[in-house]
Length: 95
Image 1 (cartoon, rainbow, N blue to C red):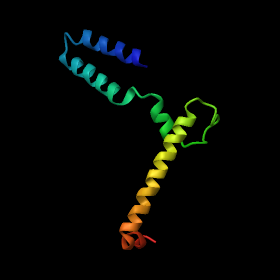
Image 2 (cartoon, rainbow, N blue to C red):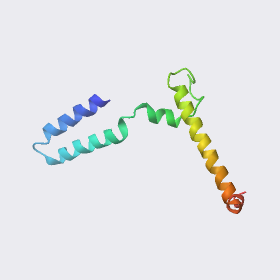
Image 3 (cartoon, helix red, strand yellow):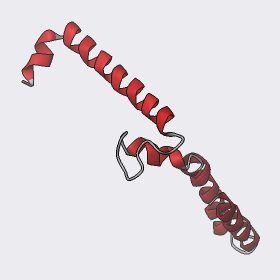
Image 4 (cartoon, rainbow, N blue to C red):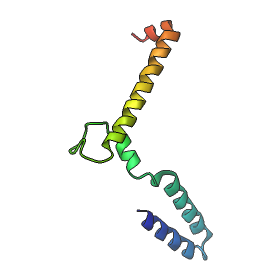
């Protein structure tokens, strides 16, 4: 994917000698790639929960992503317990 982005950027830069808007398009393409596109598998693993999918637990990154999921879940539980402890009236209003 990165090779395709860089090839498109080179084409836009070469064509941009006649049209400066294409220089902006090349810069925008690189910005979007470096901002959102380099992580690749990070977005896919964070959106699917642990134990979901056809081959759950069979990939090499599952233990690490599950560990990260557990850490996020435990942190959220700590924040919720702290909020209920510090603001008992506000936490009971929704129930």
